[in-house]
Image (cartoon, rainbow, N blue to C red; front, side, top):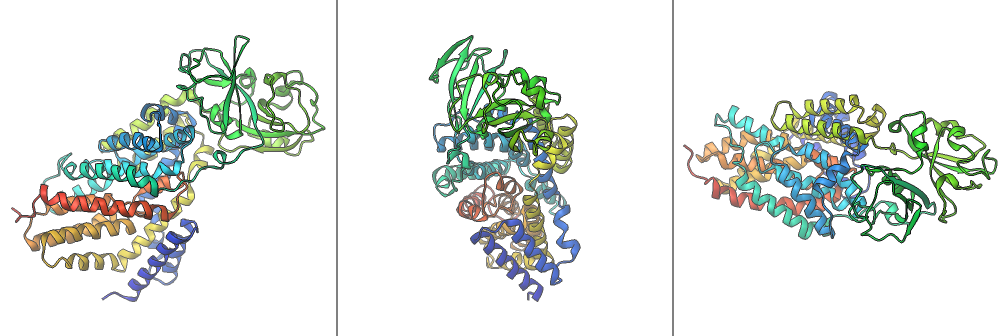
Length: 594
């Protein structure tokens, strides 16, 4: 019989899941509230309630945010996108072009760093091609998991279960590709579902920039650097044709102006490209390797470029250089900042930046040290000064270093030279020491809401364990099979999946393994089908974001709600479960064990 603590835990968990599914309250608040109730009622001790804060999975996700920041700050994410993510012709094409390489890479590499590698690249790729990132982030996580189920090293769960096979079941280790007999058909079925039906179930949430106009349309000049990979590429090939919120107005080539630039126009060294668009797109231009601001003033500022940021400033009628050109007024010397774009009442200014005569009310986009905003906030020269967050120009010269650190992380984790947490912490430290990202950027990059949600979900999972609810569910549901080996296999899969969605994947595998082993022995059947069922079910939990850490990694960047995972993931849970329990007995018959 269940105790009152167990029933209270079930009630709290039911309430938490209902609030997560049917309300828009942020997940960390709901999950922490649930843990707080269990703590105050004595169901959980303080150590148990806070155990999630010391959980390796939670810390690993937090540290991987810093690795991702290093990729973004050096422009490595754009390189990854160019190598793996090709030009899509439609949303369906985009999803396939992303999921296929991710699912093919994941069997060879642990799926968590694979998602960390692709996240910033997919985000940049979606923005470049005006796709809703919410249509891509869940498929990214799902594809990595589906690919990971095809090999012994693709997911941490498979490695954990294989360890129990050797230690507890006294059986030989599984081969690298044994699980592929089930994993490959499941991956094919899962990707087919996501491309045929999943795209209709995924939410379409776009940033404001792609939906609304912005009255602050800037005119900005960029220069094609000599030796750049952009030289010889067409405007289309260089990705400069369909920039969200921005268009290429003209090219100044050796004094000759080319207006109405066509997509087949090829870029040449020292081309001056004149763009018009909103501030977010100007930031994106700054991140394209091979382009630099046309004014050489940016290279005369005191602070290194990687330590600068973009700042908006509105010129006041008492500005000391009003009525003068930016060049004649020596803007850089006066303010230790460089004007890279100017907005004037939404009209396009047909002049080079240095030749623009400043007027009261002009909005300037500046590249400057971060201290500029504090120094000029109360100045009489500007009506308004506002720093734009996360706009440090990328350190392209450190891109190779950042990519090297990432692949070193993937290598040492996949070959099991280091545990995932150890490798991630070393990689994050290397990103900071190699100056791929600063310590300030590293701190800002961590999504604390997601980490708190993960930690709180571990607390709820702990309550299911300590009150006996998880064990009760496992034993009783498996007991419903009534002595049928195949129904017992189905129940083992179902219980493992249920616990994966509620408790997390590795904990679910650890809880169900001994119960499944005892059931197989009592039925006198081979235990191998049950091992594969546990591996598949403990990895293939798609209906809640708390079931697998890659889901939580994409939760924030995708702008998702809890209900999004339920809507898209529940049918996928049922599909993968059906394919698994049908194929497993065909490959490993439920016959009497040897």
